[in-house]
Structure formats: structure tokens, C-alpha cells
Amino acid sequence: MSDENNNGTSNGQPEDPDLLALLGSRLCHDLVNPIGAIGNGLELLEMAPGDGKAEMALMRESLNAAMARIKFFRVAFGAGADDAMIAARDMRTTLDEMYGQSRTRVVWRDDAERSRHEMRLACLALTCIEVATPWGATIEVVRNEAAWVIHVDAKRLRIDEPLWQSLGRGILPPDLKGSEVQFGILARLARRLRRPVSVSADETHLSLIV
Image (tube, rainbow, N blue to C red; front, side):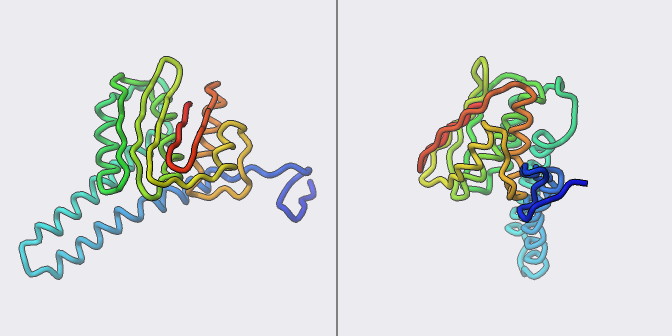
């Protein structure tokens, strides 16, 4: 049995974050908001004296956003055959519904049908970008011959440099949060696929290549 020091390390090396547990936290957190909005809509519908059309519209939008995010999570985090193909139109529809109620707009400029592992890389990259864009942004997704190229334009970005550096270095912060688990998953997937990750960012722009 190995000894652990007060920093929670073993043999002098930082312990890897528990990505599975962090992923569970992430999924639960992200699905609470749209489902909660549906519940709020039901409460308003019960109290409203009118025909309830506005409340029903609110619930429909929230339901569409929740269902789209679940589809997105299945690609980003779920198990499946890597050679299964996903159409660009399906990805566009999912992203439009998922971000429709937010201040973020994703412009998917790739028209090709892509394998699941390619789409998974792009989806994981988008979940990483969400951490940097809590105030909204315009995100452009392009696929060149070798990699996904994602450009972000925002009035303001929140950049945690050690977190973004972990994508290229593959060394995860020991205090990784549930909302950041995608960084660990993307870093490991990129290494497995031998896809280098490049990130550049300033206060209003971010570029991610994977």
C-alpha cells in the first residue's frame, strides 16, 4: 500500500481526476436548467387564466433545448461505433436547438458527413469553448483536410490558461471541476487519435484546432 501526502498524491505524482464521476456531475448540472424551465412553464400554465399558449411555447422551447443537448451529449460523451456516420444537417439542427435560447450562436460550416469519432472531437471542443463563453459568443466551426478549426468571437472571454494548456500537455489539473471534465476527455481522445491540439486566445477571440 502506497503512502499519500497531504496534497492527495501517490508516489509523489498528482492523482488523475475521476473523470467518470466528474462527467456524471456535468451531465446532471447541464440538464437541470432546461428541465427546470419546463417545470416553471407547467406552474405558470396551471396559474394562468388565459389559453396558456405563451406558457406552452416556453415549455416547447425548453424541451427542444433539453432533447438537443441530450443528443449532443450522446455524441460527445456516449459510447458508440467510431465508424458510424453523422450528417452535417443533423449536427446543425442539434446545435441550433441547443443554443437557440442562449446568447451563443454556432455556425457549422462543414457540409460533409463525418464519422462519429470526428464529430465527437468537434463536440468536445465546443463543450470546452462553453467554459470560456459564459456571456455568449459567435462560434465558427470549419473542417480542413487535417483538423477541426474553431474560431470564437466574443465581447468578453473567460480564459483559464492552465485549463486550456492541459489540452496540449495532457496533464490535467488535480482540482478539475465537473463543468470542466470535457477538457480531460478531449485531451485523452486527441492523444489516442494522435491529433495535436492547438489553442490561442486573447480577451475577445479564441481559436482551437484539433
